[in-house]
Image 1 (tube, rainbow, N blue to C red):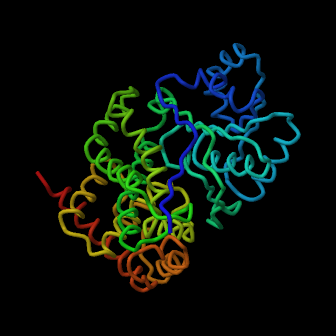
Image 2 (tube, one colour; image 1 turned 180 degrees about the vertical axis):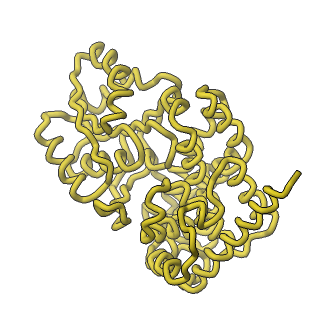
Length: 369
């Protein structure tokens, strides 16, 4: 089996680059159809208007309704076809981006992705996570190519709620550990090939960047400023994680995230927050060295990522509910990329053990002088 790597055709990141959107779209189309939430439109429309005037284009805005579901994808696809536009632009969080990618695929149109927060690695990936209208994970759609363009304005992102940047760090945290598991099992990744040295290096650089600069970046975003640390963490959350994960493969951490969607109490938590806890559970499942667990656990506590089930809204641990999570997770392709067979019972035990470990770390921090 060949090694394969795939990535967006162009990745643009910088302070204020949203104002250059229509310039960068010129190679893709001249009539952008922009999918964005109502609140997002209020924040970005003025920034886009100047470049739209400069390049003589009139963007058509469509309001995203909040869930990347089959019904929403179909609605947006119909709106795009009626609009007369020639390029889809998804602006917002991961679900808006995934909806835009799916609609563009079915319309055979180019797509540009513009995240307003560095909360997931969805912008760079060639797939969309599809949920029910109620927010329960249903399927993963894989597309034959990555987005044509990803544009990341760090001015916008540095002013977004800090919790979103932290959630992105939680998603990115899994990248290296899942890549390592996939290499150990010699699994095929999203594109049906083996991971390259380049993708492996991206995954490791992603983790190293989080550990080295995550706390500093969080402090800057809490102060609503953009520093080099913020720029580096945004790149880690968005590009290093997205390209690294897609070209090495996801494993237990993301499977556990998808399993958690079976528990309604977790629906108010971000993707990356659930993935972070899934990463801890994967490390327990692997019987990772104590020093590695210690580094990951302390990082999560330093930036405010959940390390317990209570941190995901599960106040009372029910083995029956955790078994639902485990059974869902163990049926997913990503779990089968682990270097050993994982049974639902093994996963239940790992999740409960990770929760106990997290509670212990939190208690020791609370007791420290």
